[in-house]
Length: 321
Image (cartoon, rainbow, N blue to C red; front, side):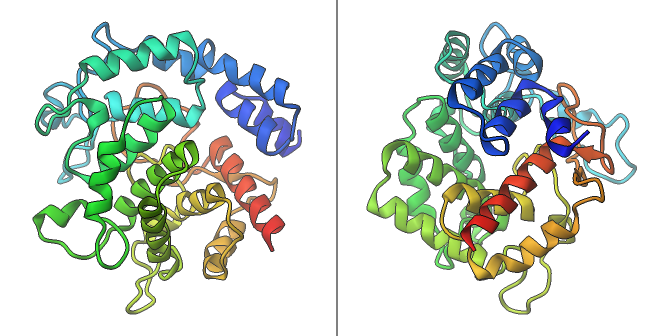
């Protein structure tokens, strides 16, 4: 079985993206496969898990109650891991699956989230965002994708950009140094909104400054010393949740559509080095926490998601050289 055949032997959420990005199938074939995401497989399973009030697990960012007290199975001495079963991470997955936002079922789902879901921080409506830019960047991505007004969230993010070009959720506590993780969440949101609306001169400039923050650091190194900031970023995850890694950054730059920048060459070399002899990439760093259901076979095993993402990054990089 070739890598392409292996990728196509999977859930509709993967298949339609493989058909579009790797097999270059006709648009009607891609669209037909994408329509299946809301009615079959992982996408349908997630939609089925939505509660009657429109939430998942009773909460926006976290389940309704008790998750911090539930440490069963946690390694001794570690804080309880964040569950990934609430509304925000579930909508992130539906977005990553490419569920059709215009389908009747998805429109009903989004309406219930809009009307009923409130942030734990201060009860703000879901698509109005809250105070942390790492969350608000994802709100912009999701709101744009699902047809909601997120202009207020964008205005806040533009005000919160730091002098070094990025963003940090700890800025409200006095931090003036940006965070890779916060910055990638905001960049993804600004890019999504810019593609959908054209953006503004201010949002485009802010996004480009944020890109420079990452590129100046070669996507994973300290600007001051050249050292690797966090070894975990050299391992590839899916789902990425709120966390940063090199593959997520490369996927962002691929999505932005500009020619590859030479400052990401080391990151590309890292990506190439991880391809296995049979052509796939592994799942390497699953983020701990309760999930609805597993998408793959676990760390150290071949990953269709990471293989799809890696191959389309490398295709973009080769075409842009």
